[in-house]
Length: 221
Image (tube, rainbow, N blue to C red; front, side):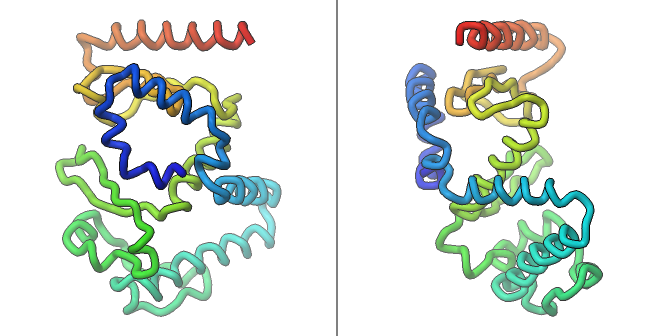
């Protein structure tokens, strides 16, 4: 469902804050398997399986199999990589060149998989380095995989799905705001683009209120 709604994300961001909050709370109340699809749970199981293997021959073999699957898929379906041989062993990775951002920006079609063109979700970087970069997310795979990783990593420090999150990152907010509450993620987002020595105390105070409200919500359960 999330990938289906992804093209409408910019429309959602232009809505009034109260409407975003109402929609966000309603959407977040839906089961995660429904929002992210079956691959989310499948990938969580893969992560847990990897952790259980620790350092072993089975782990190395699984890593090689997954790496070969990704690389060889590129050799078959991505125009740029068709000039290379398929990967068979770990050391074969050195046969593939290190590419730069400019390589992709200037030759995007050469790096698009023919297999996933129809299911790609167009996205782009913020252009903080001066040159925005367009890329495509694999529908039904990229976003569930990313969320599974976040949930696992944050879970090592007490996070559970639905927990409040304070997020400070280089991402522009609506109307160039310093901070905003994002109901879909249940987080207070603070924009590094707007943060400076003159307003950092305001951001700290808002973060404190947000954290205090989080503790109060826990106590009221």
